[in-house]
Length: 220
Image 1 (cartoon, helix red, strand yellow):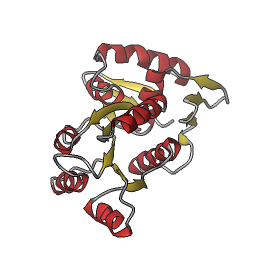
Image 2 (spheres, one colour):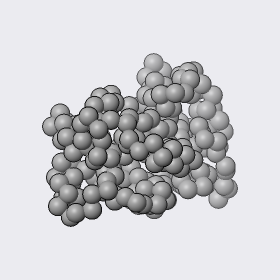
Image 3 (cartoon, one colour):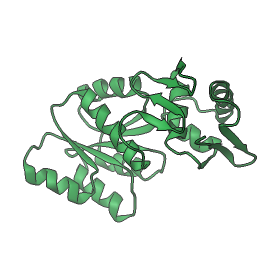
Image 4 (spheres, helix red, strand yellow):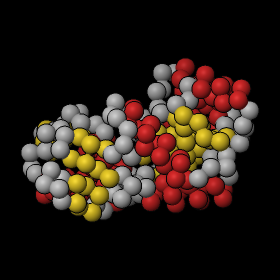
């Protein structure tokens, strides 16, 4: 999953990027509100972690602008502002969740996972689609026969995105956009390699190829 981190605290950026990347997120950073608003409108992100105290344009204005333009991107607010009315202001502007500073990275990760599941209309807890379970904390796949398979970072990001979008036609370019960050070398042909690896684990019928369109993950 691809995540936009809109934050201007350099130390916090380093800490969060490390934790988010280890949890399987492709992370891009915007350190001011203008850049954050622009990137958030690109349609390439699955979720945003948005600091309210951004320079150039504050997070509340960024969020209001997104929502007024019909941008439904899921947003978790980060802020050092702990007054209840400021939290209410964030929710009224369109935030999906809120986390006050200081916080533990583990809590942010748990909130992001829960938010992404809700956005995909899936229940909380382990990511379960059909007879497959994806352990997002350990980045392992549990198949119908009970076997546990360790996934590489790219395999995990690709499979998680497919499990959160079952039944949808996903083009190679869309998959590439959502599993790599801006600094990565993007080659949509590499997607085919990882699709083949996942089919070896899941069975060839779980990921359908739609010629000229992309792939469809079948729930079972």
